[in-house]
Amino acid sequence: MRSNGPITLSFPAFRGVTRRLILIALVGFVGSLVLGFMTADNTIVNLLILHPDQALHHLIWQFWTYPFVPTGFISLLFALLSLWFFGSALEDERGSLWLTEYFLASTIGGGVLACLLARAAEGHIPGLDSHEVAWGMWPAVLALLVAYAHYHAEEKLRFNFIFEVKAKYLAAGYVAFYLASAVLSGDRFGAVTAICVALVGYIFLRLAPHKGLRFAVSEKWFAARNAYFRAKRRRAAKKFTVYMKEQGKDVSIDPDGRYVDPSGKPRDPNDRRWMN
Image (tube, rainbow, N blue to C red; front, side, top):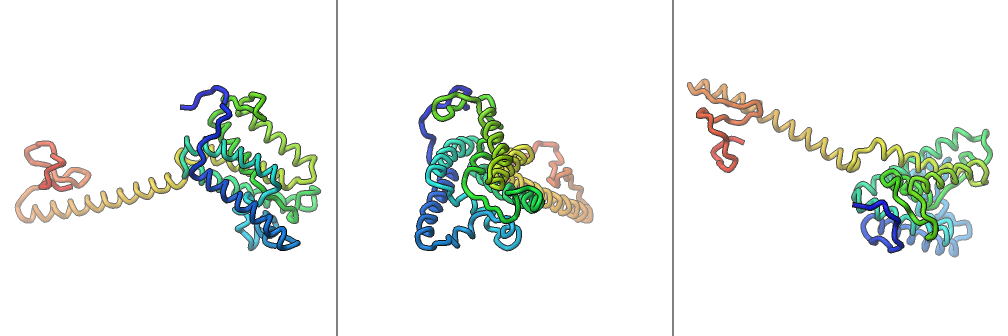
């Protein structure tokens, strides 16, 4: 169980999905440096960042790749440290599958929503149209912070390693910062993307199953599969009773299609002579 006391400055475990996300981001940083020196216009990098006019048409992979294109070394450093802290904590509590689904749902869904808003606002709001771009890990970090605050609203965190602030207030502060950036800054599309990613992440927290979408789908699938085989067993049992009556014998079958001992003795699950 996690306590509501202040978080210590010790680093969490570096493993699982969190480690893979960080390593992919680092590979993206090194790759952007190499491509920046090799190609003056960064053609390949531009294919990976989020362009509303491109992603909504033929370059759909941009909805997944844009978080892994770095905005700068210092920004990437703090973003990955935040990803390490919040991602590892959520992964320990909710599981690797849940974190994978949450990261993909929030970043991809938020990217799609931001692109749709940019297309709708084109020509009406300066700095927010289909020709703007967005990239970087901070929108995903904001979504992770929202998730952490959702599950640990009263837990105190050390902001900038100095000030203690509750998780819910820290998340609200970051959301307010991006809202202000969307209104005042020149990078309105980037700020709107961060807000949309956080919003989709929050919707995922409210609507998605407790253990994730894949787990819920697998449970539904196995429940339907078991219901099919139970119905098939009941049909076979009914045919068997009809056959035994034609042979002059009465056989008792329970509603689940299992043989019932005429003597009324309870079924021994280890006795293979019983029908399953």
